[in-house]
Length: 514
Image 1 (cartoon, one colour):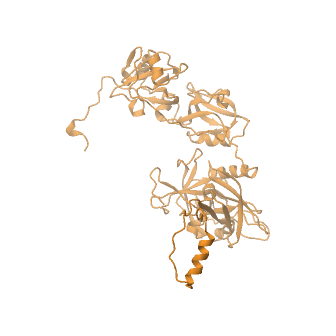
Image 2 (cartoon, helix red, strand yellow):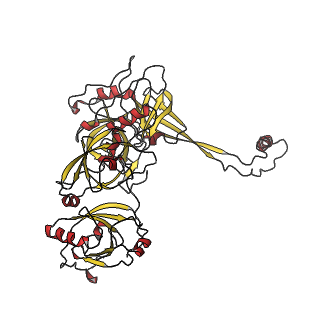
Image 3 (cartoon, helix red, strand yellow):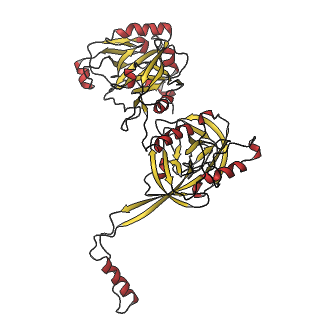
């Protein structure tokens, strides 16, 4: 396994699976558990092991290049034992354009049975591109599996196997009720060993590992390794509260930092896959960004929370429901939005074509709206857009105005500026023409050529409009909220003013860092 650079994540073929013991009638998930962890986990493991399975996949890799021509073989004496062998070989392949080759590639993972009639849950990356999938039960019985459905966005796959007898299975618990420090049990197939039980605690909640738009991972210190992917994470009642999916591993092995998909998310996806194999997700049609402490202060919000709406899609459900750019969504469908990345998951799980309440922070107060949830299309991209900037210096404008509170100059858009930066006539705002060495905008990634569409949630129609707002922000000692437009990419930035008389000391050449 290669060392991970960004966030140090290495997806592995992991699995820890959860289950009830074999019986003549389909058992249900265990409801009792040891009162204290020091009493051991033997009873729990014995009940759960039969429902945890190994997933073996085979992929046939074809090489169509083949052998272009047969080699020249040596001549043998008449009657030699090699004469007939090579004669048969040459006749068999005579005239063949090449000798096509193919080989089998196999991999191992984990899974768990959730119904007595053979539904099995695992990670999508465990079975992706597989030509054959085999589910290996705890008693080494091999069953061929077919894919019922899969969801790449959440890395969840649902399989079905056929068995002559009812299979042991496990049930989902409520991952939202799990707390940091709670004991958990993991069962899986690390390195193909099968039936391996490990324990640990929940180390953290709501981890974002940049694997997708719905990241909300449970972090654990329970040892999980390559082959554990797709396996279950159990609470002390024997309920599945997570599915092991990834690890942080500079070395390729377990270092005590593993990640599991919460059961609430897995269960929602599985229910939809059971109903037809297609996933339907709610959609608002907004582009959002994180609310920083500076942005919260500029909006008179009590603390940094919610999701700031930077722009809306044309004819979006949010726009039809009254949402505006600059609103901070702090609750959706009666669920609090404590941070930006929580909103996509809440919206995705909302009922499509149903009106739900939404609370936004607007003009220093809470405003309640009612929004009809739309459906996310398969080709809809997640938030984010590549930024592009053609030049560090903006073209000439009619007149540049100095804004000393931000050590910058701004001006009105001219035809020359619109042409150079490909800005259409419908796009409004004022253009940043110059940033001084002391400008706080530099640290925010702002460049000359960026457009200021709004300042203090007021539309910027003329460069002069910014002068008074900047002075007021300096007097109030509060950040000024700017809505910026760079090549059609809108985002909010809260910027603190500076004392125009204060100058940054440039380091002397001898004092420069070595």
